[in-house]
Image (cartoon, rainbow, N blue to C red; front, side, top):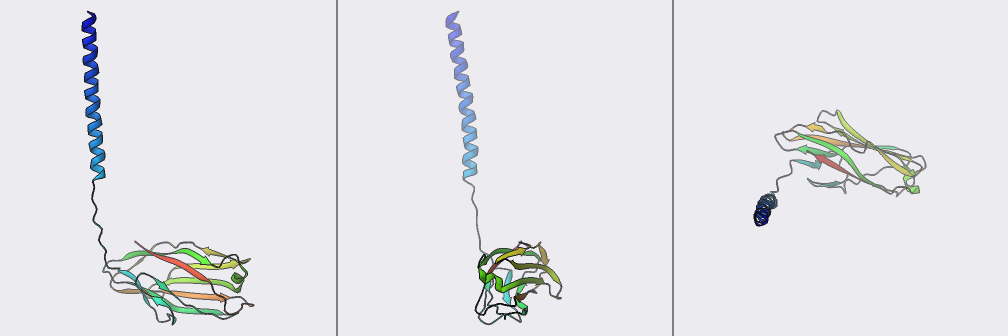
Length: 188
């Protein structure tokens, strides 16, 4: 009788080992399957892009995917660039866009006190404000509100929207002081 119990125990252990091996093999196959997925990445034409505006300052760089504006202003004044740069949707479909703050410099130095505010307005083709982002100063520190605008839909069909920039400098602003603002144009 003891020999039969030993044979039964060995048979059960063997069956358990076989079931465990099948389970491990099927789980491993699922992992290997997920590791072999393939992707194809293609580069397409930029359909929402920067283009020159009527007031794009000389010395600025405007390319489809980025722009650098060389904006100038004077002490104790308000300077407005009505059409500093355009945003053009060359696609036939509308796209959602927004402005998003990336960085500003210098910050926390006395140079900041030369400015009062710098505001970027996103205007549609009719000149209606769709979004804005304002940089203001307080005690040599910049703050931005909002840090990103809500998404708005720019229509398709070679639609031109524009970014208007209004710069306000302080009464005691010094010449040859500058600040650098980097913002992103996010496109869905």
